[in-house]
Length: 214
Image 1 (cartoon, rainbow, N blue to C red):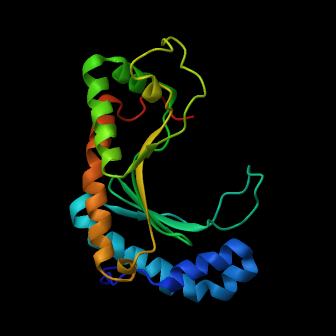
Image 2: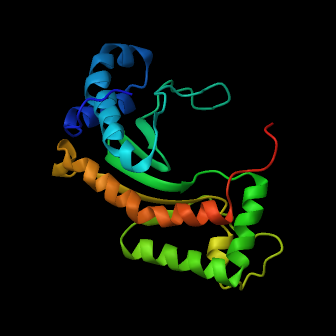
């Protein structure tokens, strides 16, 4: 990634995605590609470079969707996402979004996740983490079962967490005035610092999948 300084994310980036939402076609993309490069990609790369020394290696996702097995054949993602270490950030028509967590879990990870929630010590620690994050106005959500997971009682004290198949903490900043200034990097950094204890719990209790790749 480049080493250009981060100056903020302008309204032009949000307007680009408003247009893409209305016309998600190669024609629109080709016509506005210079806007994407200047107003979306370059500032996001600069944001990631600014955050990398504290959070880890940056990675910018491709803007193209994999439509081979999708019903929706829209060719382009309606947000530009990136990761910096364990932190995730994206820009869309709505503005800036940041998150931390496990976005998907393999079967062995899910088993360890539920075992850790069932345990009084580690489960209570997670419950306290989630409560503290929500008290700071962060959202803690994920893909959940509609009913209880097999093998656990419906009246389990942490049944809400046991229903989760993924667990993510996030904040939708939207488009405040500071978005177009270098201060945006500070807001993302603070959010990630606040959220990172959740990721630390997941790494300690769940960790990477030990199953062989398919």
